[in-house]
Image 1: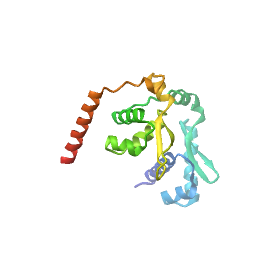
Image 2 (image 1 turned 120 degrees about the horizontal axis):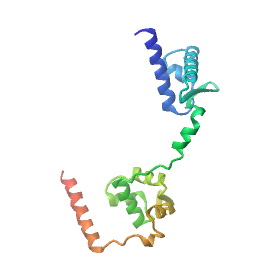
Image 3 (image 1 turned 90 degrees about the horizontal axis):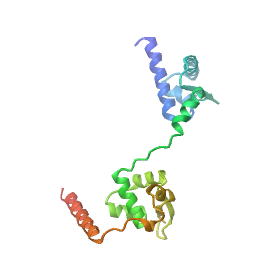
Image 4 (image 1 turned 90 degrees about the vertical axis):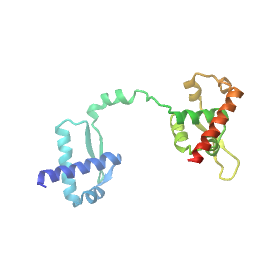
Length: 193
Protein backbone atom coordinates (compact mmCIF):
# COMPACT_ATOMS: atom_id res chain seq x y z
CA UNK A 1 0.00 0.00 0.00
CA UNK A 2 1.50 3.34 -0.98
CA UNK A 3 1.67 6.37 1.30
CA UNK A 4 -1.23 8.26 -0.37
CA UNK A 5 -3.66 5.36 -0.14
CA UNK A 6 -2.64 4.83 3.50
CA UNK A 7 -3.43 8.49 4.28
CA UNK A 8 -6.74 8.25 2.39
CA UNK A 9 -7.74 5.15 4.37
CA UNK A 10 -6.78 6.85 7.64
CA UNK A 11 -8.82 9.94 6.74
CA UNK A 12 -11.75 7.75 5.68
CA UNK A 13 -11.59 6.00 9.06
CA UNK A 14 -11.63 9.36 10.85
CA UNK A 15 -14.63 10.48 8.77
CA UNK A 16 -16.45 7.26 9.57
CA UNK A 17 -15.76 7.65 13.29
CA UNK A 18 -16.86 11.29 13.44
CA UNK A 19 -19.92 10.75 11.23
CA UNK A 20 -21.11 7.70 13.15
CA UNK A 21 -20.55 9.10 16.63
CA UNK A 22 -22.37 12.36 15.86
CA UNK A 23 -21.08 14.06 19.00
CA UNK A 24 -17.52 15.15 19.63
CA UNK A 25 -14.89 12.42 19.96
CA UNK A 26 -11.78 12.87 22.06
CA UNK A 27 -8.49 13.06 20.17
CA UNK A 28 -7.07 10.18 22.23
CA UNK A 29 -9.93 7.88 21.17
CA UNK A 30 -9.52 8.76 17.49
CA UNK A 31 -5.74 8.25 17.74
CA UNK A 32 -6.27 4.85 19.37
CA UNK A 33 -8.75 3.80 16.71
CA UNK A 34 -6.47 4.69 13.79
CA UNK A 35 -3.36 3.48 15.64
CA UNK A 36 -1.41 6.74 15.48
CA UNK A 37 -0.07 9.02 18.19
CA UNK A 38 -2.17 12.05 19.16
CA UNK A 39 0.10 14.62 17.52
CA UNK A 40 0.03 12.84 14.14
CA UNK A 41 -3.73 12.30 14.43
CA UNK A 42 -4.27 15.98 15.17
CA UNK A 43 -2.21 16.96 12.10
CA UNK A 44 -4.23 14.60 9.89
CA UNK A 45 -7.50 16.02 11.18
CA UNK A 46 -6.33 19.62 10.73
CA UNK A 47 -5.33 18.81 7.13
CA UNK A 48 -8.82 17.39 6.58
CA UNK A 49 -10.35 20.52 8.10
CA UNK A 50 -8.34 22.75 5.74
CA UNK A 51 -9.32 20.70 2.68
CA UNK A 52 -13.02 20.70 3.65
CA UNK A 53 -12.86 24.47 3.98
CA UNK A 54 -11.04 25.03 0.66
CA UNK A 55 -13.38 22.74 -1.28
CA UNK A 56 -16.60 24.36 0.06
CA UNK A 57 -17.89 21.04 1.40
CA UNK A 58 -21.29 20.68 3.04
CA UNK A 59 -19.66 19.29 6.16
CA UNK A 60 -16.78 20.41 8.30
CA UNK A 61 -14.85 19.20 11.31
CA UNK A 62 -14.66 21.41 14.37
CA UNK A 63 -12.32 21.18 17.34
CA UNK A 64 -13.88 21.36 20.79
CA UNK A 65 -11.52 21.26 23.79
CA UNK A 66 -9.35 18.34 22.70
CA UNK A 67 -12.14 16.62 20.80
CA UNK A 68 -13.39 16.76 17.23
CA UNK A 69 -16.87 16.69 15.74
CA UNK A 70 -18.23 16.53 12.21
CA UNK A 71 -21.03 18.99 11.60
CA UNK A 72 -22.85 20.87 8.88
CA UNK A 73 -21.15 23.81 7.23
CA UNK A 74 -23.24 26.86 8.23
CA UNK A 75 -22.83 28.16 4.67
CA UNK A 76 -25.54 25.66 3.64
CA UNK A 77 -27.94 26.41 6.50
CA UNK A 78 -30.65 27.80 4.19
CA UNK A 79 -30.78 24.61 2.10
CA UNK A 80 -30.73 22.43 5.19
CA UNK A 81 -33.65 24.29 6.76
CA UNK A 82 -35.75 23.79 3.62
CA UNK A 83 -35.47 20.04 4.06
CA UNK A 84 -35.44 19.86 7.86
CA UNK A 85 -38.52 22.04 8.26
CA UNK A 86 -40.67 19.81 6.05
CA UNK A 87 -42.96 17.68 8.17
CA UNK A 88 -41.96 14.04 8.31
CA UNK A 89 -44.44 11.57 6.93
CA UNK A 90 -45.02 8.79 9.39
CA UNK A 91 -45.73 5.45 7.80
CA UNK A 92 -48.08 3.23 9.74
CA UNK A 93 -47.27 -0.38 8.93
CA UNK A 94 -49.77 -3.18 9.53
CA UNK A 95 -48.03 -3.94 12.84
CA UNK A 96 -48.30 -0.31 13.97
CA UNK A 97 -51.95 -0.07 12.89
CA UNK A 98 -52.80 -3.29 14.68
CA UNK A 99 -51.08 -2.12 17.86
CA UNK A 100 -52.68 1.32 17.61
CA UNK A 101 -56.12 -0.27 17.18
CA UNK A 102 -55.65 -2.37 20.30
CA UNK A 103 -54.58 0.69 22.30
CA UNK A 104 -57.46 2.78 20.95
CA UNK A 105 -60.13 0.22 21.82
CA UNK A 106 -58.68 -1.18 25.07
CA UNK A 107 -57.12 1.93 26.66
CA UNK A 108 -55.73 2.37 29.18
CA UNK A 109 -53.68 -0.73 28.39
CA UNK A 110 -50.23 -2.10 29.28
CA UNK A 111 -47.68 -3.56 26.87
CA UNK A 112 -48.29 -6.99 28.42
CA UNK A 113 -52.01 -6.77 27.62
CA UNK A 114 -51.22 -5.71 24.05
CA UNK A 115 -48.79 -8.62 23.69
CA UNK A 116 -51.44 -11.07 24.96
CA UNK A 117 -53.83 -9.87 22.27
CA UNK A 118 -51.23 -9.73 19.46
CA UNK A 119 -49.33 -12.83 20.53
CA UNK A 120 -45.96 -11.16 19.93
CA UNK A 121 -43.71 -8.55 21.54
CA UNK A 122 -44.87 -4.97 21.00
CA UNK A 123 -42.05 -2.82 22.42
CA UNK A 124 -40.94 -1.49 19.03
CA UNK A 125 -44.48 -0.79 17.83
CA UNK A 126 -45.51 1.03 21.01
CA UNK A 127 -42.27 3.05 21.06
CA UNK A 128 -42.81 4.07 17.41
CA UNK A 129 -46.40 5.12 18.15
CA UNK A 130 -45.15 7.19 21.10
CA UNK A 131 -42.50 8.75 18.81
CA UNK A 132 -45.25 9.58 16.29
CA UNK A 133 -47.22 11.17 19.15
CA UNK A 134 -50.24 8.94 18.45
CA UNK A 135 -49.92 7.13 21.78
CA UNK A 136 -48.96 8.50 25.17
CA UNK A 137 -48.38 7.27 28.72
CA UNK A 138 -51.55 7.85 30.71
CA UNK A 139 -50.48 6.50 34.08
CA UNK A 140 -49.33 3.35 35.82
CA UNK A 141 -51.21 0.22 36.76
CA UNK A 142 -51.49 -0.35 40.50
CA UNK A 143 -49.82 -3.77 40.32
CA UNK A 144 -46.36 -5.23 40.96
CA UNK A 145 -43.77 -3.42 38.84
CA UNK A 146 -46.28 -0.60 38.22
CA UNK A 147 -46.43 -1.14 34.43
CA UNK A 148 -47.06 1.89 32.23
CA UNK A 149 -50.57 2.38 30.89
CA UNK A 150 -50.90 3.63 27.32
CA UNK A 151 -53.70 5.50 25.61
CA UNK A 152 -54.20 7.51 22.46
CA UNK A 153 -53.27 11.18 22.26
CA UNK A 154 -54.98 14.28 20.91
CA UNK A 155 -52.74 13.90 17.86
CA UNK A 156 -54.34 10.48 17.26
CA UNK A 157 -57.78 12.12 17.17
CA UNK A 158 -56.47 14.87 14.88
CA UNK A 159 -54.75 12.47 12.47
CA UNK A 160 -57.76 10.17 12.20
CA UNK A 161 -60.29 13.00 12.00
CA UNK A 162 -62.37 12.10 15.04
CA UNK A 163 -63.51 14.34 17.86
CA UNK A 164 -63.46 11.76 20.62
CA UNK A 165 -62.95 8.06 21.21
CA UNK A 166 -66.73 7.70 21.13
CA UNK A 167 -66.45 8.33 17.37
CA UNK A 168 -64.35 5.18 16.82
CA UNK A 169 -66.15 2.68 14.60
CA UNK A 170 -68.16 0.12 16.54
CA UNK A 171 -66.98 -3.42 15.99
CA UNK A 172 -69.74 -5.69 14.77
CA UNK A 173 -70.12 -8.60 17.26
CA UNK A 174 -70.31 -11.16 14.42
CA UNK A 175 -67.10 -9.78 12.87
CA UNK A 176 -65.45 -9.82 16.28
CA UNK A 177 -66.25 -13.53 16.62
CA UNK A 178 -64.90 -14.18 13.09
CA UNK A 179 -61.68 -12.36 14.00
CA UNK A 180 -61.31 -14.40 17.19
CA UNK A 181 -61.77 -17.69 15.29
CA UNK A 182 -59.26 -16.60 12.60
CA UNK A 183 -56.74 -15.55 15.24
CA UNK A 184 -57.12 -18.83 17.13
CA UNK A 185 -56.70 -20.83 13.89
CA UNK A 186 -53.63 -18.78 12.96
CA UNK A 187 -52.15 -19.29 16.44
CA UNK A 188 -52.80 -23.05 16.19
CA UNK A 189 -51.11 -23.19 12.78
CA UNK A 190 -48.02 -21.52 14.25
CA UNK A 191 -47.99 -24.04 17.11
CA UNK A 192 -48.31 -26.99 14.71
CA UNK A 193 -45.33 -25.86 12.63
